[in-house]
Length: 497
Ligand SMILES: [Ca+2]
Ligand SMILES: [Ca+2]
Ligand SMILES: [Ca+2]
Ligand SMILES: [Ca+2]
Image (cartoon, helix red, strand yellow):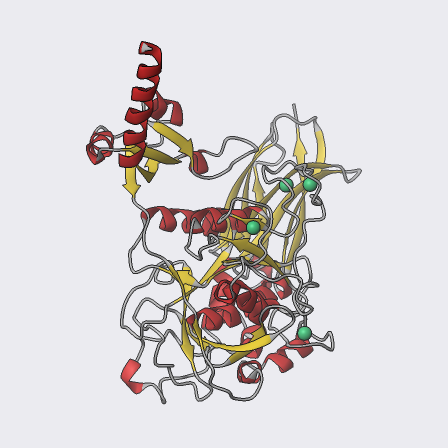
């Protein structure tokens, strides 16, 4: 009897604790790991997956259950935590509308058809859409999904990435492999966003999209009731799957340090461009992630380039785009008109992935410059919102033909590379003079063309210094080669022992 009594008491106690405990997202200080937190008796788990090498950035985020906030305060005071956060109110930025204009006026506004004469995109370039579910069976959506052929739906994690059967994308809202919409049509927000950004184009069916041949990756972050579950995990997943642009048609009035850290990480370390919506409350405000410095925040315009009433505005948003009565795929082979900053964001992100595929050597900051510095003026018709709707209205054609700013031209004789000392025991100092900002690759080959060393670097100044450590390779003659978008230079080096 006492045992049964004890068990039932334990059940009640643990039940009460479970009732009181809240889950917080915390970020550990660099020298602390999860075992440290678990040892102190708290229930903790890693917030984000990292399955290959231990990634210290991703490992620093935990979900911790505590019933007393003082525990977290004490951990922060002792230096073990950098910060903790409670979940915020976040919402999808989407207003259904029944205003009827002509189909897809927005594509002519951004001069998409002329842009497609120059570029139609490449199916290896992927736009991740972090949103509600998508009806990927839709005739105008099924062919442009970035299927993961490495992991067919068979109950096994064939590609060993920690996500079993992530063939169609992933569903962080229901924690399953299937990002299909959950029932009611409101939850088809993601279908519209994927379709406006990246519906199959030139397939003699339905609608067109700026992304043309580029693909979309559905990352579902809403539960079956429509509430947002974990946008950070969705953003990380998109980046880990190789997306070069991520569409975030959602936001919160509350800043989150964890969200800012994660977006900085995917931008700086993974070269991913994040595009987000300003929100639909018609306010001069800040909305996150759109208002973050490295995110392209998008306001919405009508067909006269005037701000639509519901679009938020403010000094921290970056660009405006068509967002009134945007015609695109919906559910069950249907199409619909939608308005709001969500769809305006999809117009920008679909354009951004087309640009990335056409300029594969350009990084996030260059694509950003291309998008923002090529816009059309909107302030003649929005004088009351001067500088509060971003730099101007997206023009895809202008972005495509935009000439990136270059360094001051140096004479041709000065372009190239100096290597000292040469010969050397293995340590060479390179001074490389380039003409353009951009990504470069440095390689070292032997006389038979065998590769000994390779690194990529980004030049944001015209003179780049690199140190080459080759003391592990055999004595002999090698070629150092630097390749960039409009640059190629080779020089011989001699390694002596
Ligand atoms: Ca998998
Ligand atoms: Ca599988
Ligand atoms: Ca699902
Ligand atoms: Ca189509």
